[in-house]
Amino acid sequence: MTTGPHHDEEPPEHRRFARHLEALEAVAPADEADLLAAVLRDPDPAMADSAVGRHLDRRAAELLTDPGFPAWARTMGETVGDRAFLARRLREWTLLRTVVVGGPWAAEELTGASDWFQRKAAVTPITGSPEAVELLAAHGRTRRVRNAAMRQLPRRGR
Image 1 (cartoon, rainbow, N blue to C red):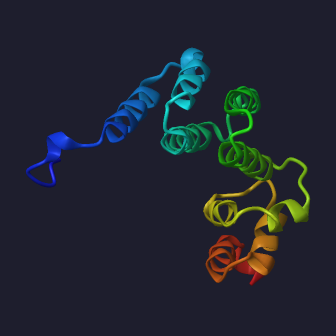
Image 2 (cartoon, rainbow, N blue to C red):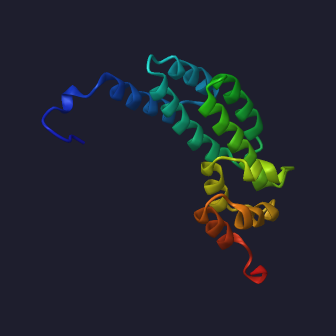
Image 3 (cartoon, one colour):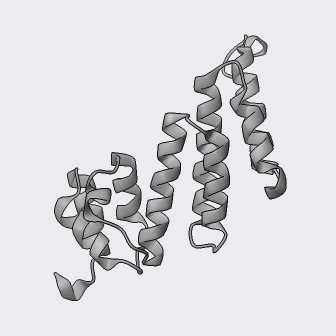
């Protein structure tokens, strides 16, 4: 889509970003870590983090209840290394998976998680840990989170 007469003058980082997203969308699982590492070597770290972040969000959502999620998350964690935003997002996807499948979690993890995590958890069907939904309905950081979590609670419990 063009937005004006100078669409050919799109900054090179915008073109690289689009190419990164296309490549990440099509990458085979066996090549995923190598491609992420290549994208993270882009000369624009913020743009690279954004492209990889979008990919991680898409893949984590796809794999959320898949038994292969933990191994995938470990590999992705090793790949993103100390990139703070990406490492945190992976930790929070892992926490969301734990809650969704009914694994062990602590209340402080949910209440101390980012706004993004709380919003995501409040709208994700969490059958494995109904206590997590109750916690977010009562103690979510924002009204939006509390209301969304409240809508997940069973009708009989209200």
